[in-house]
Image 1 (cartoon, rainbow, N blue to C red):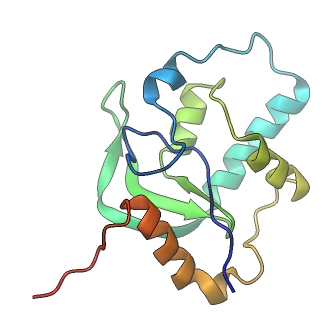
Image 2 (image 1 turned 135 degrees about the vertical axis):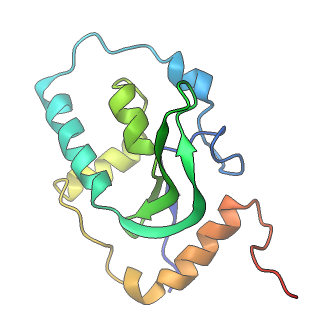
Length: 148
């Protein structure tokens, strides 16, 4: 059984092989929303909670620094709910740039779950295959293995 992998919140300067990753200057140049509706404001709080509850998928020995300030954001890691995968830096930039564009399909997925985090059924049984598939995307198809 293969689970679908969907990616959200990736920035090219952090993850150059991710298809559809945003270019950081485009994040910076996004047009701010003048006023959030009550629903958007409530959804944003629920979104942050959801992202913080993500299941660790994979990571590297290292950290991620803010592209603007060079402040340390956190570990070079990736989280999932068994369908969507997001980088550890995604919540940081969402807090910093409230108007950052978010994939509407991802928001629909969260709204359908009422923003309650849970792993997709079947994920635990297929986690290794899911991780390998994501690793191939993350590394541009290059193998992470080596031999002596």
